[in-house]
Image 1: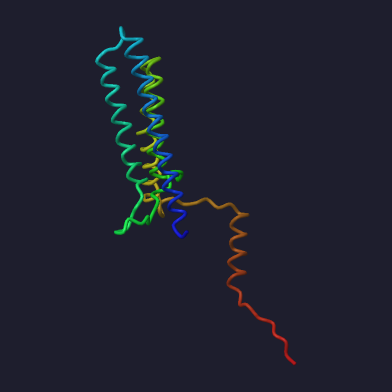
Image 2: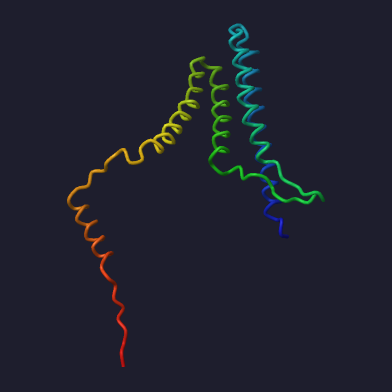
Length: 173
């Protein structure tokens, strides 16, 4: 009963990874059937490269998510941890985003090759996140904040109030 949460998380992770695998397989099947079989006359070596790129873009995040979802067992084979919670944000969310963007690019590239530019969203978002991270290190003490009169007076009043000696009223008999 104590490991009920771990068992539940393990089952959720198995379902989640299975669903993700089916999404990846479905996108690949759609691409191969439509692009390679129906539009075979316009299929060039660039499309082969695109298929390899999307396969790698599926493989790397999927393997990382699979490692995160793997449960931990002790020496006796008893379940210790059900794996990482796949519904959380952070790195797990970013890996899911890469997989979903890859699905979108692969399926939509059937219509037009210009959808490959959507892949630029991934490094652009990485640069955006890095800029915010780096900005946090660089801006300490270098920027002066403007304080209007009303805010300044309120701050001074609070500081004055905080510096006053506090008297405790007691009853004397």
